[in-house]
Length: 302
Image 1: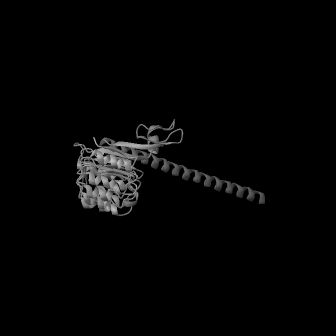
Image 2 (image 1 turned 90 degrees about the horizontal axis):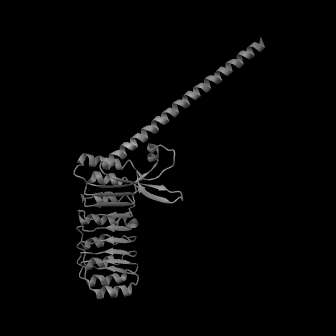
C-alpha cells in the first residue's frame, strides 16, 4: 500500500512539474512575442518619423565607426553597416545626429510644426541647420529639448522675442549661427548667462541687425574662437571690446565700418590667426603693422 501511495505521489509531483514547466514556457513565449511586436512597432514608428523628415526635404546625418574604429559622419541612408542585417533594422540601429532643412513653399505651417515636434523624438541629435523659418516659442521649445545638440544654425530666419533665451539657456551649444536672420539685438544678452557663456566656441552673426551693443553682450564668452560679424554695424568701438576675448582666433569683419583705429585694438588679441577685412576702410600699412605684432596672423582684405 505504501509503495502505491509513493508511486501516486511521485506521479502527482511529476504532473505538477510538467504543468509548471508548460506554464513557464507559455509565459516566456508570450513575453517574447510581446517584445518582438513592440520592437517591430518601434522600428516601424522610427521609419515613419524619418520618412516624414525626408518628405519635407531634410538631409539627415548619422555617425558610425569604420573598420579602424574611427568615428565617421555620413548621410543617414549612405552609412555602411554590418552584413546580413536587414536594411530597416540596420537603419533603426543608427542614431540620427544631424538634420538640415531649407524652408520650401510647398511645406505648410502645420507640417513645419510637426517637423519641429518630431525633432524631439530623436534625442541624440547633435547638429541642426534650418534656413528660412519663423522661430516662435513653440518651435524654440522643441529645439531646446535637444539636450545633446552641439551645433545650431538658424539662417535667414525670423526669431520671435525671448526665443533665443529659450534656445540657449538649456543647451551647451558650441557652434551657433544666426547668419542673415532677423531678431532683437537685446536678445543676445543670453550670452552673458550659463551655459552659453561657458561653452560657445563659434558664433556667426553675418548680415544680422547688430551693433556695438552686441560686442558688450558677447564679451563674457571666454571660449569663443570663431566670430563672424561681416555685414553688421559693428564699429571700432565694438572691436575694442572684442579684442579682449582671450581665445579668439578667427574674426570676420567684411563689409563693416572698421577703420585703422579698430584694427589697432586687435594687437591685444595674441591668439588671432585669421582676420578678414574685405570692403573696409583699413589701410595696408595698418595691417602690416598688426602682422608684425602678431606674426602668425593671416589677413584677407580683397
